[in-house]
Figure 1: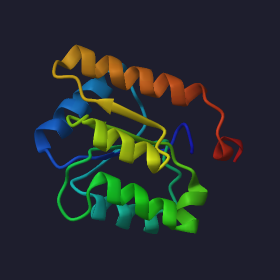
Figure 2 (figure 1 turned 180 degrees about the vertical axis):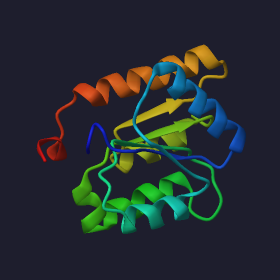
Figure 3 (figure 1 turned 30 degrees about the horizontal axis):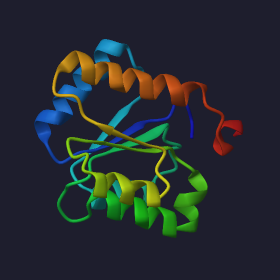
Length: 141
C-alpha cells in the first residue's frame, strides 16, 4: 500500500464511475483514480503493474469476474497477496450472504453505497481517512 498510489475502483456502472470521480474531486483527493469495469480488467492491471495502489474499492456484481471472485484470486496469488492492498467492497448490494462471504475472504471493509451524493462522499472520506492513518505491512516501503 502506498498512500500516494492509485485508487483502484472496480465498478461496472459508468454512471457510478462519474459519481465516484466527482466525490473524490470534491474531497480534493490527489491520488490517481483507475477505473475498471470488471474484475478481469482489474486483475490484469494488478498482475502487470509496478504501481503500489493505495486501496481497491470493488463492487460485488459485475460481469466476467465478480468482486468476490476477484478477491479470491488475489488471496490465492502469492505475488498479489504480498502487495497487501486494502480491499474494500463498495456496492449497492449488502445482503447478509454477500457480506458474510466477503469477510470469509478477509476483506478490509464492506460498505453499502449511499444513494445520495453527500452521504456517498462522506463514506469515501471515512475510508480514505482510516486507510491514510492505518499502519499496514507495505506502509514501511
